Image: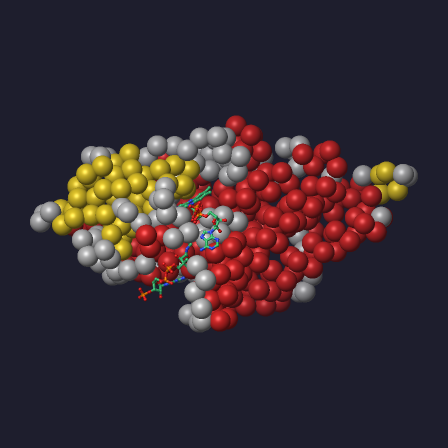
Length: 389
Ligand code: TGC
Ligand code: FAD
């Protein structure tokens, strides 16, 4: 499909600045040239895109809202959202790489790190020279990270870290990991663990049917000596990791619109070209109903994200508002991926078309960063004031 057919049904572009549109265009073109030609093979072969993080660094997709003095681009939250949307039109694995690096590694170092930590890590993370991962989930504690078992003890001149994290994006590739663990008082704190520290290993998780172009693995800590200067000094308690999730979930709300757009545009084009019973399948009401509903849902998701971005720019977006957008938009995208696959009939199962890949990827996206049901419970708690977890 032509890039000019990407929908803006409600003229939302009029609400964007020229800078927003330029950023979107440049990422869109990069996705066309770097991601689209290789992504099917990478996903089929379960390999990542070589050199992805450095490429993301070159196009300014890592830490776009991190201040310029630390290597970021100092952009606003709408720019961040648009970048995520364009990356995920390519593949959720590409957006995931940028999400983790930006919102889960650079964000906590920028928000809660010491001046030395910011200077040491942020510029290299922004350029993609260094790859970061984020360890919150554990084998026995996913939706309930507050019950985590990973812990560290103060040994005088260093901390001793023990425990294990599971389902960690980019763990097999990471140079550093921002790890959340409990101190001796049971308070959650963040530590920057570096590859090469004795007792730290990152085994890969094989055989995924989803996010196959992204590496996932464990972070295992067996009496790891972590220097004291690697503790994030600025936060203690679960609100540390959860505030990183606010940023990442916001980016995902935008990102999945890109996956939905890729499926929608592919389906529109196919429905006009493919003929059955002597007419294009797009001339039949049943197929038009699907397309009309896709466009309606994409447009609603775009409006939700734009206003959420405005709130975020004003530091007014609440965690519950972000949960609503993450939950709504991921479901919107996975439904469009599945339904649009049907419009292509048998062709829809092939790697030449993106639907199966997006649908499979979105099974991870609807689970990570808080499951679909967990986000519903967050909304329920916001409405009633009653915690139903
Ligand atoms: P609760 O008692 O409600 O809260 C504990 C403390 O945290 C504060 N808080 C938040 N702060 C900032 N942002 C938020 N969204 C916050 N939500 C809560 C809260 O105010 C409290 O602070 P304080 O000072 O009173 O102590 O916590 P809970 O234990 O009942 O759990 C709440 C729950 C279920 C909402 C939360 O734990 C949750 O969101 N669970 C889902 C876990 C999750 O999302 N994991 C994601 C792992 S990372 C990942 O998936 C990366 S994938 C990346 C990729 O590849 O793209
Ligand atoms: P569980 O918490 O065991 O949930 C299982 C089911 O029970 C879900 O349907 C859930 O909604 C439901 N459930 C749980 N509690 C309740 C309740 N109180 N009421 C009703 N239903 C409930 N984590 C990281 O820390 N860093 C990463 O980089 C990262 N990357 C990931 C990459 C991938 C590809 C995947 C799949 C996951 C990743 N995760 C990461 C982990 C992810 O955040 C967790 O999988 C997710 O939070 C859910 O945890 P869980 O898998 O343990 O499921």
